[in-house]
Image (cartoon, rainbow, N blue to C red; front, side):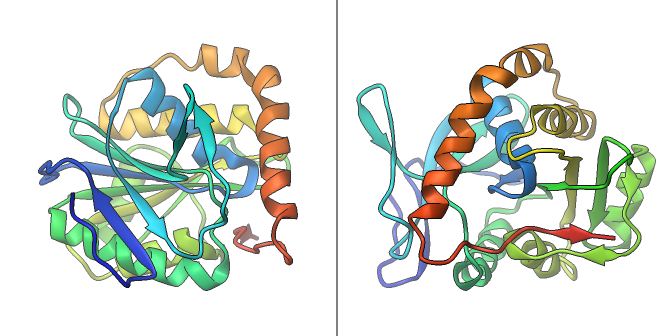
Amino acid sequence: MNKERGKLVEIVETKNISLKGYTFIEGFPDLGLAGTIGTKYLVDKLKFEQFGYIDSRIFLPMLRIQNGVPLHPVRLYINKKNKVAAVVAEQMINNLLASEMATTLVEWVKKKGIKRVISTSGVRIPEGKSIYAFASNERSKKVIKENKVELIDNGITSGVTALLMLGLKDNNVEAFCLLGNAKNNADYNAAAEVVKAICKLTGMSIDVKPLLEDAKKMEQVLTEHLKTIEESQETKADSTPMYT
């Protein structure tokens, strides 16, 4: 186990696994939870293996229990068959922590030799398309165009996603963010669009029908979970991207 003491954000690898040439998917909570729901769905359905977690001494003291044991709120997973790694988070990352989280992830991505980063988020564009994207640089933008995903030309973004994309702007890493067009707090339709776009970009294959079928059943659970986290903070974390 590799853990550095004293850092505000620590990436802990419980298994020593090479990620050279891998794609890394980022699924932190954001508008509509599209990225978080979609990333977790991929991890569960394609049976990713957990190989670490991200820790911070200023995370909220709130954990999810699964099969009788607590889970780290931000976990790292890997699918060796498809050469894809992912981070799934159940903590809202406030603005104070976003910069340190993004900086730590950028350093780790470069150190591990990861070739592509797919960040995930949500956007709210009434009557808009179901999925959008923006890229960290011209090279990455070309990949988005080749896969016929609608690019957002102008807008504003914030939080971990914004700083992660900026940190990878001048590096030899393809990096882009996929944004599901979310209509509510836990939008499974937007999550399904994110999943489909990820599969298109990575060559993975997965059926999104079960995701949509579980939408009504899971929506209330995740919405209440998010509400509990937000209410436990004195001020609501503001890390939601806004676009025009």
